[in-house]
Length: 533
Image 1 (tube, rainbow, N blue to C red):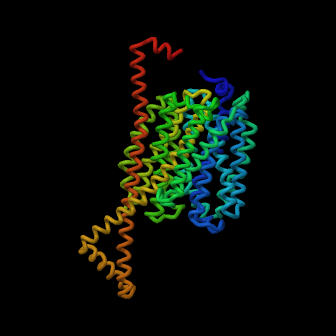
Image 2: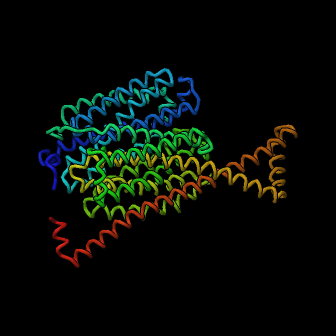
Image 3: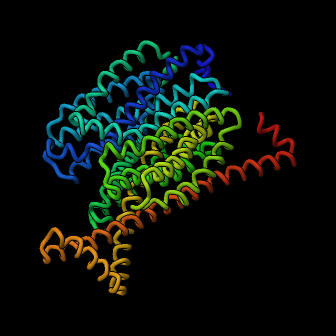
């Protein structure tokens, strides 16, 4: 049964619905695009903020922490003040935070102001998705989620292009300034045109103890994942302490939820098999697999192919366009044949692309071919978001806002895991292959000597014999490093596919439950009647 608040779609005409969609998607696109663009400009802001590469990473880390913890408040806050006000608060916080970030003159200021932005994104993306799902009729919600997915999936791919252009032609502060006029226009339009989604506000008993401990657990976990590579993972006492704080805080949180009369998160939502399946698929395929590839593709072009940030963005643009186009297509297909079937098509496309296609990228791959290979992956990414979101939310009713918040929480945490896994695997695999190639060279001294002699005679035409010999040996080390890095990227791409397979198990379990449930109902008609009742 649809709750009264979700029947607002009956009062909205097609023209008004389209206009509201533009308002909502503009805010979401602005927020998520800013996240990826800021990661691109980090090297440019180190000197103005008087910090190093490790200090500037806090600009990204604090944003993730603020956004993830903010998501845990959205459901309770929306009940108290209404989902429209949450969206407006998100826009205001994000826009004001952008202004402050653009004016920041120290690392401490930037970190503080980025927390404003992160909290704003949490309110903004969760409420926008809920409103969008609400203003469309059930038979068109797949399309609505396809439009939303366009903003969520297209913006990370567009980030390197825009970030590269801004850093090459303007100053880094324009990354934040550009949000201000867009944000102000969206705030005014939202205040005037978005209807009150929740007409009647309710009294909410907020569980401060549960929120305190799950926030502490989330902060510790995301900091651990962000700083693990820098600190040497569990060789560092800092990381060990974070692990224990996170584990203990999660345990206390669950105890608080069990004994409390008003839990922070209604875990009965996981009894709905569609949501339970979607959150598992979302965490493993998006968080632990796709986010690895989102991280690896720019790294491949910049570190292995030595392209500038702007050139990298241009090479990734065709894949971004594929993601945008197929986000809409998959949304329409979800309405026509059901999100479950579209997800099956998606994983059939995704697994070969990430396990068989991308691992063939290396230093010698022609650039045009590399673009096509990543485009193939982009098609499957575009096909993913709309059906998984539609499947997750279609039976939640009044719990839609909670479901949306948990999905985005899984995106932040899963994405942090995925990025950490990719970073760690890439470094370890590169060191392993470098040692293997060096060991092979020590056993094949004849070929090593031939390589050095060849380059010695070529460089001796322009340098003295001593310098020519040093340069030829340096070229051997350089070639070894490139080959090791090529193998490392291939290994990491391939390993990301393993986590996608785990995500597919949740989908397989869903179809098994569907099949088993239908057989059980066929054998016992009274059970089907009880389910319908």
